[in-house]
Structure formats: C-alpha cells, structure tokens
Amino acid sequence: MSPLNELYGQIALCQKCEIAKFRTKVVPGEGAEDADIMFIGEAPGWHEDQQGRPFVGPAGQFLDKLLATINLNRQQVYIANVIKCRPTNNRDPLPAEMQNCRPWLDSQIEIIKPKIIVTLGRYSMAMYFPGKSISKIHGTAQKRDDIIYYAMYHPAAALHQQSLRQAIEADMLKIPKILAEATNVQEAEPQPQQLNMFEV
Image 1 (cartoon, helix red, strand yellow):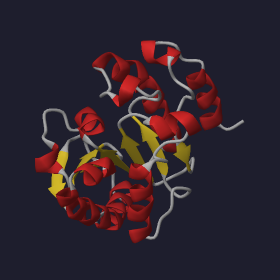
Image 2 (spheres, one colour; image 1 turned 45 degrees about the vertical axis):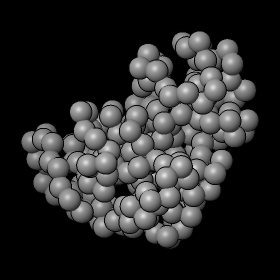
Image 3 (tube, rainbow, N blue to C red; image 1 turned 180 degrees about the horizontal axis):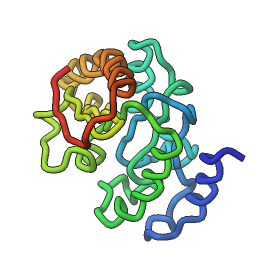
C-alpha cells in the first residue's frame, strides 16, 4: 500500500470534528503521488461529499478546464482541501476544523513533495500567506524552503462573480513559468531559509 493510501485510511477514521458525524464520505484528495503541482482548496461541497473526491462539482469542472489551458489534467497534479469533510450546509470551515485537519494536509505535502503549492481561495491562502488579502496577492508567489506557494482565487469565485474569471484564467497561465522557476530553485545551491515574494 502506498503511503498516501495508508494516510487515506487514517483520515477515513478521523472523528476529531463534529462534522464527521454528518459526512457521507471523507474527501482526502487525489492525483499523482509525485506531483510537481499541488492545489489546495477550502472544503468539500455536496458533490464531493457524495463521491469522496475533491473538486467534482461545477467549480471542479472549471478547474479541469483551467488545467487544460496549461496542458495538464488532474491525474498529473494533486488536488486536496484544507479540511477533508463537508461543513454542514456548505458553511465556511471553522478555525478548529482547519487546525484538526492540518496534520493530514501536512502529511500529504510531506509525501508528495510538490515543487509548487497553489492555494485556491482565502482559507488555504491564509495558511501560507497570513495577514494577506487575496484581491491583492492573487497571481503572486512566495518561496519558502524548497516549495513555491502561489495564490489564486478559488474557481468557485468565477461562478459567483463572472468578473473574476479572467483573473483566474490569467493566473493559471502563469503556472508553467513558476514551475520552471521552481525547478531552477531546487537545482540551485541551498540558501538560508527565507521568505521571498515575487511577481510572475
């Protein structure tokens, strides 16, 4: 059994939050175990809760189209959420729920070792860009250790606010350039740990 599948088994047994009682299925994540790019959304919705897979509703269909614009599909990347169970009535994730799920997400990152983590929406953004506003930092990346973090609007935002669609599409098109930058960074001499914000 692969380390990810082993982790999925542990996540399926998790009862740390009240929402575990109401879930249909746990939604740990899916994709390539050695993916260069990892997308982190917020929380499963109704469709995801039914299927146990991330981003399978309308926002997921838009994400698939976005991936196609950079010649990728979901089998080549890894897709997960900040929390692994659907919050009741699709409400926003609570801080305690995010904290309870954080070790699962950290374990996924440790196993996959992505070169780029793309945060989708403000909840995943807040984990890696604390105190920042998504309207100001979307389309920008931050390098920390061996991982480049890249902030984007959640695909669902385009479904609710058509004006954001163009920004989301433009931000997705920057990812190949960031991946090239990530490869260069990892091949370079080790540098002191630092935070470095740059426009792409």
